[in-house]
Amino acid sequence: MESHIIEFNADELQPPSWLNARFIGGILSAYEKIDLNVTDLQISPATAQGDHYASVMFRTKVEYTTAKGKFSKPLIIKTMPEQEGHKKDMLAESHLFETEIGMYCHALPEFERILREAGDHTKLFVPCIYHSLKPRQVMIFEDLVPQGYTVIRNSPPSVGDLKLAFNKLAKWHAVSMKVINEQPTFLKEFKYGLFEMPTINSDPFITTGMGNFIKMLDKFPELKKYKPHFEKIKDNYLDRLQVEMHEFHKYRRNDRYYVLCHGDFHLRNMMFRHNKKLGAYDDVMLVDFQFCNLVPITVDLTYSVYMLMESEQRWEMGKDLINDYFSVLLDTLRKIGFKGDMPTQTGLWDQIHNNKYFDLFMISTLLPVMLAIKSNTLKMHDAIQDPEARQKSYYHDAYVKDVSKLLPKFEKLGYFNDL
Image (cartoon, rainbow, N blue to C red; front, top):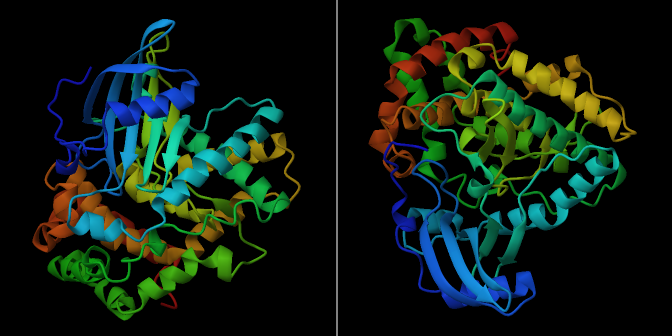
């Protein structure tokens, strides 16, 4: 049990008025296909500050009676923010809930079916017992916590923990490659990721990142020599990044690998199950599928280098973990009878290094904020809305050290050639 104090998001402290016993009772009655009466409903925040931003989440414990007796059911309620402000404005016209509903009800059930037919009973998702887009956007899931799953907090994940996550991602990616190859239109609805958010090109959180990064480089003698490379691209690198992100739909190449990505593959979007006999985690469940879309295979992998891995792994560009991931990817492709051209390890790394603008975005915009939030010196809300707080994150020792290790790697890989 966690002993530290968890701070919650302000918009999750008070549930909306419609989230009541009548609403939950009607949903449970339909799901269980039985008449029931809710006798008690306890509602609390479902996540801590920094866990997520693109939704509002509540944890509920429902006690109810039926003709067969008394029962209880723990649930997670996910909905859109109703409080006025940046969060509501940013998400209002997005496709987040349509995407996530499609994942739970369309894509992931098919992925699990394909794995089961091959003798692999890996679970890729928790059941969604209810979803709607009107009159409000809502999803309700079974709560994984009573099943022994938890989010890792206040300590870095072990290499074994990370391998669990990458193994599951590899299986997901492999099945998606088979579906893309054999059922070309099955996943056509998944075309809205982070870079399709309506405000992505105007939100200061995104647009000021490179400028803040260049200012930081200028302050450190050992980093100043890299400044001209980034000044050269500061006005158009986001446009070039969009080309990378839209490659599957607009610029598809025969020598590249494409998957249905998770889109937000970081530690707070993973819940690990602890096995007391092993004294370690034995399973991980990925959650939060709002940014899933069809993209180059590199997207989840590059994102993980900056948002999931620890510094020592990041300094090696995730080499060992990604190579382990690739082994599981190949094994799964063979097991499920993939009929396309098998990917190669050399081809994967070539593609990762070719899609360098995502690296440049991650190191200049998301990495400083992630490290500051991780060190508890910055809150997610302030990172997104407070420009001064965001600027300070660029000067934290951990971030400067990471940049000092990574930029020579970029140079050696040729990232600064032909910018």
